[in-house]
Amino acid sequence: MQTLEAALSLLVFASILPILLHASEDPRGIDDSLYRMQLANDAWRVLYLRGHFQGYGPGGREALERDMDEITRTTSLCLFLDGIRSTSCRGGDSHHPVTAAIRRTIIRGGIPEQVPFSLGN
Image: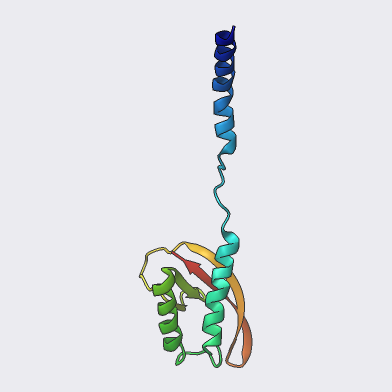
């Protein structure tokens, strides 16, 4: 009798095991969008605190891109300000997928202007 009970229990367990395993899988993966947005905000804040957006223009772009290059070496993420106007990943025609994008205000020529700041791979 115990053998029959054990066999039935094993049969029931074997029949519901695939359902239990499939239910534990997360098909969407981990949502790390908040982490990526925070990383973009942190990179922007570093550049802002270094004073690169005071009188942002052609002369200040070299210093800005040097700091962007340093952030890229540290994080292995490409930084893009206002498209590819200022970037740490000049790669010609290669496409860089955007990981996170935020909009920030800079003052260009005495006029406030919203520009996109994005991270990519």
